[in-house]
Image (cartoon, rainbow, N blue to C red; front, top):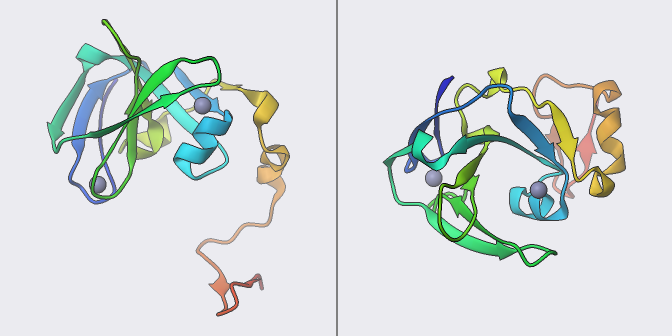
Length: 146
Ligand SMILES: [Zn+2]
Ligand SMILES: [Zn+2]
């Protein structure tokens, strides 16, 4: 499947070929911190199936619990995460951050990994109250749900 993506500000644009059935949710604590969210959704492709069309990615090399080094690419202007890969010789796999992909509605995760650090409320998301748009937040930061 051919996909294309961009960061939030539009400085970074790319396209890639992916297998649409090769996507994961990652609940690891590094993904929680680096995404600023509860979990991350990624799809995987080969280095040579990813084409950066514009911009220059900034790289942050994170060291995992096991000592593994994982370069994290993101937009230097707006901070949108684009992909992570490995260090050293190729061929490399790129774990593309699904939120930056235009066709993300077609990329459905097949499994959840690092579930031991998943936030416990994640399984209840489907039964939480829903609002079509963002509700009111007052000047004290209190969310009002009406
Ligand atoms: Zn950007
Ligand atoms: Zn992770």
